[in-house]
Image (cartoon, rainbow, N blue to C red):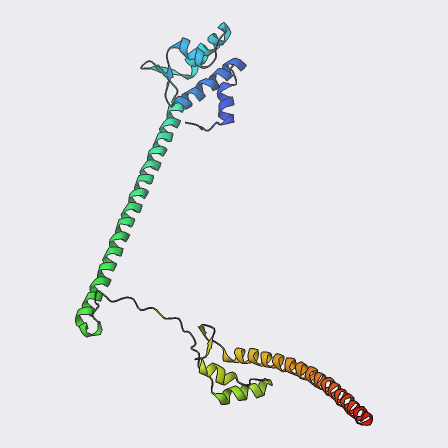
Length: 254
């Protein structure tokens, strides 16, 4: 027992006539009584050691307190107030234990009932499903051992080769130079390298860029060719003029 009620007024009224040592020993004896939850031993030497009564005066004070507030019965010193408080304490503990057991039993019983209810509910659902299946056997398709769950296939867009009109219309809208584009890819099955073409419009834009690059290169070469031809013509005219001069001089010598 770790707690007991200490009424200051009652304690003072009952111990006001005692000395300070006797009051202290009386308090020690009461706390020992409640701590052990039983009457005090009648062995005075052992009892003196338990309450730290060492000197002769303390031992004499201890004997005086025992004779006034305790009664010897069956080799134990009893105190009526302590016995009453201990009886209340034990009764309260017993009541709490019974209440706890009853609560635990109630929880266990409720859990069992809930489990039984859930089990009954599952059985009812299964029975209902089986009954409906028996009533409507044609609604169920037979399942074979090789049947696999149906999975949604990922949709992929397939390439559609454009017509020449589509290429021309797109080229005009984007101002592209796609000369030869349709014929080239139509002849190779619309492949880019070894792979199937995915976006002909993107390829058309690339084709136009390459056409433009080749056109610029050809223009450069053409201008260079014109210059070389003019120089060649000039050299030829000089050769003809030199040859004519030589013939004229030969005729004069003859």
